[in-house]
Image (cartoon, rainbow, N blue to C red; front, side, top):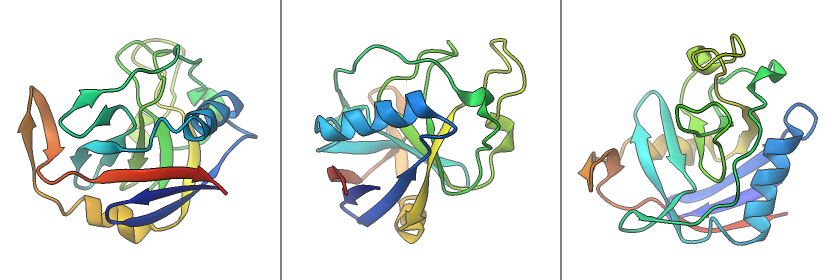
Length: 163
């Protein structure tokens, strides 16, 4: 169990080591190293998702380890309340950034082993605190340093711990 202590409240997450062992282990290692402490949810789109894990306040990018293998072909769907690895257009580019699905986002699921079809790997699920995640979607967002959908008031991950 992972607990994200945020400025809006606590979010408890169960990692899926059975279906996404590489991604779950990667996330837990970032938690254990303290990487997420003091990071923000830097991209929040109402009805879609809340993304975090890569920036400190002021959109100061944090260093991350090497990218991991995309495990999106694990049969687990991007349903409301699940956590998935964020990445660039390159399918195997995920490192520290993740997002929490605010609704069922089946269009993010794996369909084929090609650039368009790889999808986004689900590696965990919010088991407590989805009301906190829903609060994130209510904050006002805008463009900041070329990034869109940035909350005007920081949603801070004060600490992330393994329980």
